[in-house]
Image 1 (tube, rainbow, N blue to C red):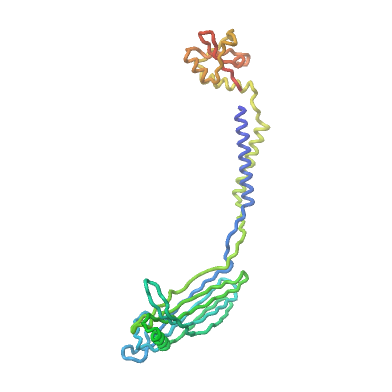
Image 2: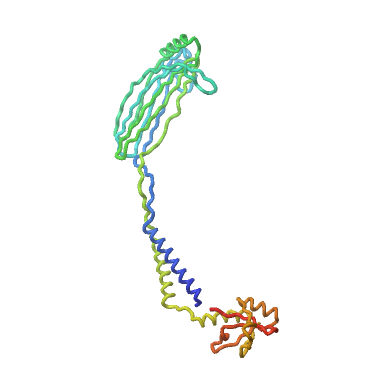
Length: 342
């Protein structure tokens, strides 16, 4: 085995063993990462529904109109609005809520899809109310209102302002849920409204979109992956194999001697240029000044081709060129020589 091959194989074994050791350490002791983990998850919803109760009349003998109709202000007796909401958590918690219902009357002017409020007044319909429960909190609140109080207020306001404005009353249901858990406290506000126009003899009622949202109390935890058994086996086997290969190279193989290296290189040259080589019995006598050194077998072969000469050598007792010398004679009493180096 040539020296460079031996060194290359030993280096490869060392690199492989090092890589396998690093892989084994990383597998047995994986990197700890941080992950946000939900400790208490919860959901909250809120919605509204309404009915319009009419004064007795021959057009609508049923006396009640459901949602999504066109209503005549002159026939409205009471508008009944029902708000509902619930809060549901996935674990133990003390859940409470504070809420209220207000009627907010506004006179406004609309320009370029924007609203400029000119006056406003709030009428409490349900004062601030607190409720509690253990794991689930459901709210349901119904209010009934007529329009006369709000129409009287808007008429007075327009008389003072001496102008006509768009006007409406918003029935606003709003509050906050509070969930106290072992992981901390969660607060979730909610708000939903029903808008009733006051400026037209015929009107429609608009409800806010149902509210539905989820959230969680979270914590950051260190996550250590479970070591992979098959990777541990693979890396361990790889370390053993690389170590065995290195030990074999160190203790059960040897580097070639200088003579063996010279012989191996000479055999390679003979295999490549054997047809153009000539074995002589003795080195020619020539002065040192007539020697021209060549640095490679390829260069010596090219010179031999140019001068139509053989690559000559004289064997020693081991079958190697004497003085490790290959040469090409020149007709001008010169020798082109190549000294073999192991």
